[in-house]
Image (cartoon, rainbow, N blue to C red; front, top):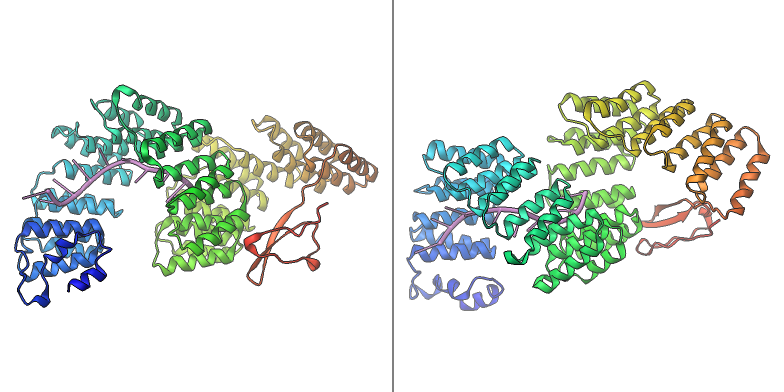
Length: 617
DNA sequence: GTAGGGTTAG
């Protein structure tokens, strides 16, 4: 038996003396198991901490055999063990039901267990049952779990109700509850109340400070978050920020583009012994990525001792944002090899950005293999992926089978229909969504306006464009204007489109003018085209599109000399046309090529090292 | 002495 422990239990964080003192069945009763329930409670805690369900089950068996499982301490420890190591609700409820005495701690374990496993509604049901059937009075532990449940549900009314209970019982100076309350109000964007709770604390600790900073960041109040951070760092308070604080503050700095301060914070974190902290490192990486400094981000990533899904996602997200899809693809290969536990949502998003259907399907299979299902983030990403790869019917099939859809899911499908030329279905879906009481956002309107422009629904498009600002208070962005310019100029209402751009705050955005200029060729309008091209050349003299598009307009109306003049002007000014690039898959290898390449003569390169077979213009 | 807070990405 001792040999068994040596061989199989040496890597266990459980102290060996504790395992051994359970007794050895082969010793034939010479070493009797200890009968003290207290010892068993400690053992169960150790197993829970060590994450060893095997030991937990072993101890449970001993307890049942020796009839000690009716002890109150032991029962509660068992409940905690099963909830943490085996969150199977059938099992947990069996343990709960079989407890001889259900005290406040047993009920609180259930409430907080449900919160921890992501079932806040179940948690609140248990809380209510505890008051109704248990006839027990909630303590500070129970209330902090209840506040967290309402925070997770985004139910500020329930949260406020618990706040009342906290206040009446005089728990409002409790730091644990206060940080939950700050979080609860902050995540529901009731910032005044979050700040009030925080400001009423006499000596907030590092976690309370992190809570307020975190909710300010969450609500995009980055400057305020920094102010709080600097107040927290005042010497007289002697509060030491930990990894969580650094991570949160790094988000604010990344969003503000304050690289220098980000670097300083990273350096300070290292000197205060937080080097190698995965939260600090990942958030530093993300800060660089958000500021577009991908080389620095990559450097942090390469030097990290431990990486987790977040580190991978931050790096992938950075490359995605920089539209460096080759880097994403390369990373994806490395990630597969290292078999990291990565976030399916982000990887699928990268696949969708690349229109990499094969990799996307691999991820989808992997997701199904690990038994993942009903995750709304992943399912939305799958809808997006299949729609972007042109498999719009399959995307719709997935969409129809999703039981819980959120705004992101709807947006993915609306945009999916729109991008695949199914304008009418996109508009129909948009209306369905509104009917179901889901409030469309910035992205939803991009989808529906895109659909209108590609289906020629001028009247509807104009109506949605107005409704966006008037009914939903969304300020039209450059994407919405792009759709509108496209919508108007496709049907030949070029002057109207020109007016729209001139009156928009994006009149200096050459992408809008380019959309209009492109349509001038179709509608043979050199008059508008000349005005627009002149405007574009003023904005960006070296932007090739204004020259190329104007030359095209001249060609369509037969003004060949003018077209030649434009080409000449391009040469004189040294403007070059950027080659279009794309990639195809041949024999499971990805091959990148440029618009000027001759496909027949192309040499295929392995996807791990995407190099171009280039003969640029 | 069995139950509890804030954490980086999308």
